[in-house]
Image (cartoon, rainbow, N blue to C red; front, side):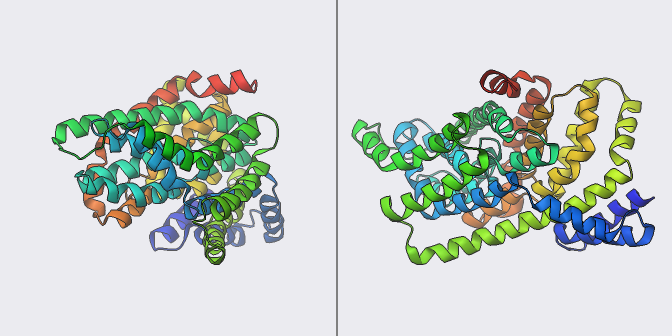
Amino acid sequence: MEALLLFGLLFFLIAIGVPIAISLGMSSVIVIMLFDTTTLMFQARSIVTSINSYPLLAVPLFILAGDLMYSGGLSKRIIAFVDSLVGHFRGGLAYVNVLASTFFAAISGSSPATVAAIGSNMIPEMEKREYSKEYSTSLTAASGMIGVMIPPSIPFIMYGISAEQSVSALFIAGVIPGLLFAVGFMMTAYILYIKSGFVTVSGALSLTTTVHTFKKAFWALLAPVIILGGIYGGIFSPTEAAAVAVFYSLIVGIFIYRDLKIRDIPNVFAKSALTTGTVLSLVVFASTFGRILALEQVPTNLANFLTNISDNPIIILLLINIFLLFVGMFMETIASIIILTPILLPVVMQLGIDPVLFGVILTVNLAIGFCTPPLGVNLFVASGISGLSIEKLSKAILPYFVIMIALLLLISYVPSISLYLPDLLIGK
C-alpha cells in the first residue's frame, strides 16, 4: 500500500507540473507522515549522506567544464577540423555533425550540452549548404545522445554511485557502444541523404586546410586525451579528472583561443550552478524516495514478479528494456537512474547480468529518452536552435529511432560489446 501511494503521489505531482525533484521529496514526506515507514530525522541524515560523496563531486565539475569549453570556442574548432577531413564527401556535413558530437561528448559528458554546442554551429551551416531543416535538426538531436555514452558521462557517474560500481569501468564500457551509435547514425544519415535527393554544396579536400584547422583545433582535441588518458593511465581519478578539465578549459578558453572573456566567466559559472542545483536536488530527494522503496522491499517484489512471468533472461531483459524506454519518455535521466538502479539492479544480478553491462543498458535506454517526446530534451534544444516544430522534428527523427532500438538490443544481448574493453584494460 505504501509503495503504491508513493508512486501514485509521484506521478500525480509530475503530471500537474511539479518539478521532479520536489515531487520526489513531497511524495516521500507524505508517505513517511502517513505510515511511519521511517522517521524524518533518519531521512534527513540519509540526505546528508547521499550528497556527501567524493565521486559525486565530478558531476558539477564536468558540467562546469562543458560550459567553459562551449563558451571557450572548443566546439567550433572541432567542427572546422572534422569538416576539413570528411566535409567534401557526398553528404559530408552529416558525418561532420556526428563525428563532432562524438568528439565533444568526450569533453562534456552531457547529451543536451552536446546538442547545444554542436547544433548551434552545425544546423545553420547545414542549412546554408542546402540541407533541409528537418534533416539537419533530427540528425543533431539524435547524435547528441552519444554525449552520455562516450566517456566522461554524467549518467555513468550517477549509476556508479548508485550501484557502487567503478566509474572508470563504466566509462570505458561506454566507448564501443558510443562508437557503434556514431557509425549507425552516419549510415542512417547517408541513406536519408540518398533518398532525399539533396544537391548540397561542399568543398574539396585540401591538405592545407586540414593542417590549418588541425592546428587551430589542437588544444580542443587534446582535452579528451588528457581527461581520459589521465584516468586510465592511473594519474588521477574521474573526480580529479573533472577538476583538471575545468582548469584546462579555463586556460585554453581565456589564454589560447581567447574566446572566453574574463567578464563572461560569472555568467558561465551561474549557468553551471543552475544545472548543478537541479541535478543535486534530484540526488537529495531521490535518496529519500529510494530508501522508502528499499524498506518496502520493492526490489525484491519486482524480482519475484518478473521471475514468475519467465525465468528466461532474454525475456526478462526485453521486458526491462521496454520498461526503461517508457520511463525515458517521461522522466529525467538522473532521477531515473537514482530511482531505478536500486530497484532493477538486484533483478538483473539475479539473472547473472554484469552490473557494469547493466549500467550501459540503463544509460542507453534513458539516452534514447532524450530523443523521444514528450520529455525529449534533445528535441527541445535542437528545435530551439533551428526553429523547427517539435511535431515535425519528432517525425523526422523516426529513422534514427529505429537504429537506436536495433543497437540497444545488440548491446543488451551481446555483453562483450560493452565488457571487452573493461576486461582488457582494467580487469573488470
